[in-house]
Image (cartoon, rainbow, N blue to C red; front, side):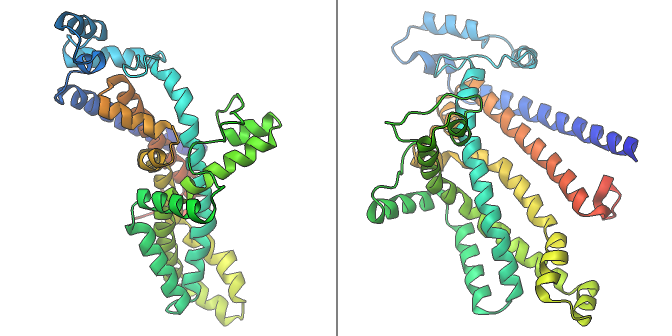
Length: 343
């Protein structure tokens, strides 16, 4: 069994590596055939053609696309993702600076989604076709249909009107400063530095953008949890438990919730990975200055090295999230373990 598990694990990793390779090749080629000269955009309209040609040669843009790609992959395997033409820094250094801010926001967002979506889905399924169910479905529909940036702006306006002291921009109060730490997560680094004031300020700054970013996930996961709970309520073993007089809370939280959590967890894994790409609007509204905003700037400025790094890291997050969800789901439902379940 262990050898079979290792074999399937290695096969999935090989498949994920192939997906990442194809993704990187497609983005690399597309980024170079899209109109616009990165060297000219980097130097500005006042630069001479000779200066532009020199920069193109230094960036390797005068070589065939496949030669450029091969050189990029070789450097990337050695930890060199090139230099950003916008910031002038090594892309690896930019990632270290910007990625923790977005990861911290995404982790808090996922915690909020789990804290609200799963209980709300259970409650609406438990009181199906009641006013509680109707209100929950309406809330779910609103969360899915309204874009995150509109939630972000609305939360800012509400906070400015009714809670004027609540922070609506940045990651921490400027007069406090951010402690330097090994993780780049302000919540963790402030605890490690013994700065309770920074921790409370960072938590307050996180609240509004995390809520705005979590609304779509809450609506989607609530709906999926509700549907899974209602479907499993009709199962024979649930009807048998009810016939034996087992209390409803025991049936719901001991048996149904575990069985109904597979689909929401799958969506949650994909949601965690996609939040990196979806967070850029919220980051722009709240002046968050994270990895998603960095990626948006790379797209607008056609910063090829930064753009490739953003795509590769986003792809890695999707791969890791899918692999983690496969493992978690196989633990919850033994029928799915090691791919032994039927269709």
